Image (cartoon, rainbow over the protein chains, first blue to last red):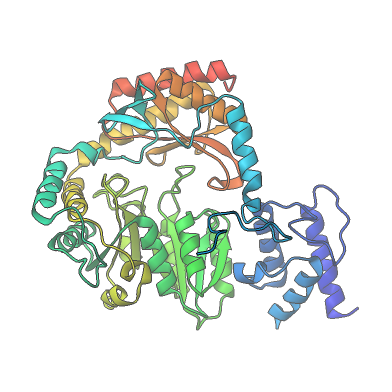
Length: 80
Length: 412
């Protein structure tokens, strides 16, 4: 299992905690449009991702992340 | 000019730039279709005092202004304004750094320095511009601004105007703030932005813990005390004073449009290099300064707020009584205990919130109807802002009006 696969698994697990509507999630799933999360849910989810990987995702960076796949790659970059 | 001037642009495939506002247009139209008075377009036809106005031809108790200390009709404040208007004219015509600094601006800054016992004070044209200017100027590229997620729009707009990296943390969550500070690069510049009182729910911040953690991680701290100045703290200096951390705060931001009772904004600080901001802060440099009559009223009002202990005590008594009374009537409030002059009454949804707002207006009471995006967590609420000049009888009247309106609308 690659590092990216491990990150992907962890992120899918975190998404599941917030995916109250049970929407099917792929790497192309968009957080705002497809998962229909409000801003408070997004903030809590971002905080959960930050805690899981011990990173900071600034609001500037978060604004560029639209899909699950982009988040998996961004977390990899932020981990260095 | 061509013959087509004044006609709408041809509608090709490009979208109408107003399309993005359509959801809000729909919400507003649907709300007004229910027959309520437009809650965002109330006109005060005559103002009789800080607590009473004529609205829609009816005597109305004002419980939705920010006139916490009731200074708008103070005779000394008004006299100072009249005198300045006569002596200096109606406007300044310019920026503070060119022809817009008058003797009154200096006197107003001296009054602020006396009030906060700080070395420096800078007056802006509004509180919004004070946040916009200080945050965007202080935090540059590669610096970090760490802010509470429920921060006021002027704080977010200050972040947007600058180039810094922005990090938000959950509202009033000390651990969340600490976790984020720990993860930031040690060598990076950091500005933690907090508010003393958060204006929608009227709750106060745990500044004692938050300021200590911020300083321990090498961050500078800015506290917006817009909704606490004059009222909270032994000398009315705000929540930072009350919690004993004012000396550790690098910047206090405030406004003249609330307890001071006029209009304008400011920043006070003890930083030895503070004065350079007058040359580099764009919302200070590139805007007209406040008119002499306004800074004269502000200076007089600020000096009077220092000695207003009796007013503070009366306002606290009003806040406790209104909070307890509304709770006993069965309303859901924004805070468990009264924490400020703001008492937020949570409504189940926008429709019943608007109906309740209208029913209160019919009873003769004006409050603020607040809804997203101004409110946290999608809430609709009726925001009550008490004034030190509300009498005991008026607080009793207000409770009676809430009971009658609440039963009529079915909220209680």
